[in-house]
Amino acid sequence: MPTSATPAIERIARVLAGRQLSLNGIGSQAHAANAVDETWHHHVDDAYAILHTLREPDAQMAQAGDVTVWRSMIGAVLERRVD
Image: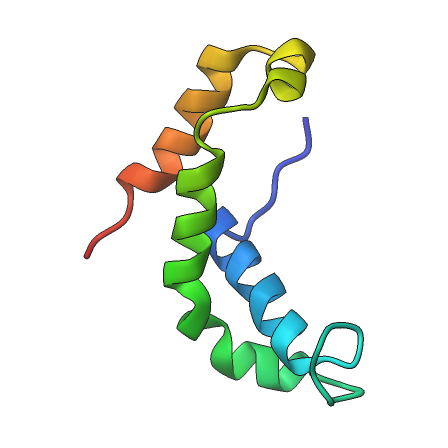
């Protein structure tokens, strides 16, 4: 199974930053990559909030896979958080 070298929290935070900055989202920058690189860390709290919401799968998600594995995977990310 392919895995990402970039932590899940950073990937989520980058998507949130890109959405705020890029014309492809609600922003105004045609080329937002550098700005995302500089600002994604401001979205880390929101990324954790999203994962907290997703730690319990909905019915459709539960039908598609192993709920115990899902909870373990999300839990592994949430346990790494240092406040």
